[in-house]
Length: 171
Image (cartoon, rainbow, N blue to C red; front, side):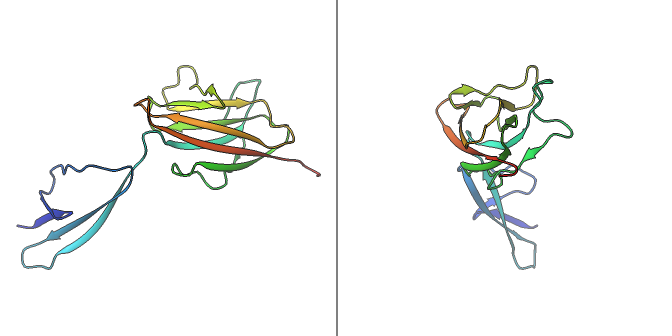
């Protein structure tokens, strides 16, 4: 029959292959040889996130009357650069004196999130790993928000920083 190796180790098709994954990219060289054929080689890369990384961060409009941070018709402001769990510093433009929220999606329900020394809590009864942080408004000067994520091990930390730059219309 065919042979299968993963990173030079014999493996069996359809059976689990145990491997230790480091945080970040983990390439695996998979080689398959059918009887009477030349080997075919593939590279599969598995990316393991840090246990303290977020899955996503959004900055959205906020409606104080309904206490909603994102809803159909709300504005989502674009982070610069686009969100990547490994990138720790972002900027975003928001209309001056506009209420907004920072919405974070955790990779684990056991992670905790603190923004500028205050807990960012999930909405009451929400089973999803979202944390919301409503901001009254940024005013007319830039504001910085430090997001500290603590992994389930309660030791590993990841810090993200978002600088909110007010957009002043007619200026």
